[in-house]
Image (cartoon, rainbow, N blue to C red; front, side, top):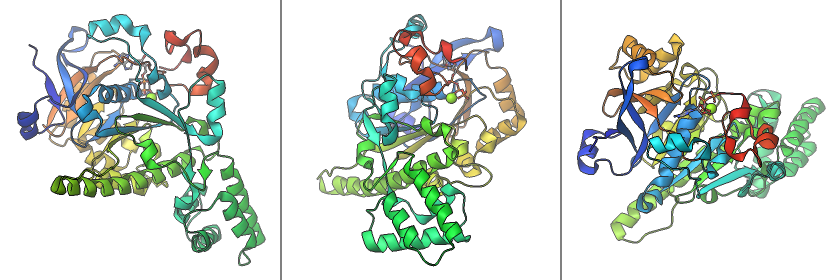
Length: 444
Ligand SMILES: Nc1ncnc2c1ncn2[C@@H]1O[C@H](COP(=O)(O)OP(=O)(O)OP(=O)(O)O)[C@@H](O)[C@H]1O
Ligand SMILES: [Mg+2]
């Protein structure tokens, strides 16, 4: 039997559990360039929390690789899978297609000992105001998604709109939020915010008008309600929830809206998992099981937009909390970026597994080195240069075993919709061309 390479486990876990609860993500590549060939399977640990960084230049296979990890969670035996939940923040609108089998690559899959299969447990969530557009495109939306207005802080709004806590806009938002909290607790709507602003006598009309306009625009994002989607509905045991936020590409505040959303979700996930952890410990001591949310794998595409190296977004604080303190309460993060150099340095330093597809900029390779300081910059560069020129080839840095591997990530058994947003795909792919894959997206 071919020996398997397990990544993400230290030697103690490896000795105790072996390859149990690991994901088959690809094969070890031996030899350089043209001469290279595939050898041992590479298995990635899914039993403990990890911070995984997936990087690489445009079109090298990052989103695809994240999909491979999601597929593997789907394939876990029930007793492990039901303790996990996956939340994919889909900024490009590409993951809905995981519900469909990858018939297109049936031959390639065969070579890898795999068969096309759609993920029966994947659920697509879309901001409520946009559900119809998906339906018109022939895509099934499993749940509309909304945020509770009352759970957003004054600071969330201020950052989202690009004001500061100390300018007159920021000050007014803060005062209005305080009033609303006093009046309604945490259950109010955007209209309530606007009404409260109209009533405010302490601010110049000009400032007031500007703010009211912003909140009216926010109403149009189709995202807010008095009572939003519950975290429990997003993080169901064994379910892969795909939160498609690609729509906001067309709105001017596009990234700030998404950052606000990621901020709120990260805060809620963290709080809920802390609670769950206590309940689990209580359960272990007393033998009484309490219903809690499962451990979480959160996967975020284009992470540098949420936690940039320079400046900050509404998501910066909450996501960094997940990164730095999420392990204990059982939160794993898979971060995708084209530019590791542009990612917040705390995210880099906390990553314990890196899957890096081809990278060429020196700054980006240096960013990788800051994760694995046991290796020389030149070594990492050589490993990257020697990769075969195939899609999905990558180097893997494993901080747990302090090793580097060259790998070929395996083909997907569920369909990968490529890199284009959903609505562009609508006419060309849904229906007659369903199984021909991403050839018409023109972006690879
Ligand atoms: N492991 C793989 N095996 C086979 N084909 C792959 C693999 N990884 C990627 N590909 C092919 O490469 C294409 C591009 O991959 P992907 O969409 O993941 O790129 P990306 O790095 O996320 O690009 P972008 O930066 O534009 O988001 C895929 O549509 C697929 O056809
Ligand atoms: Mg991508």
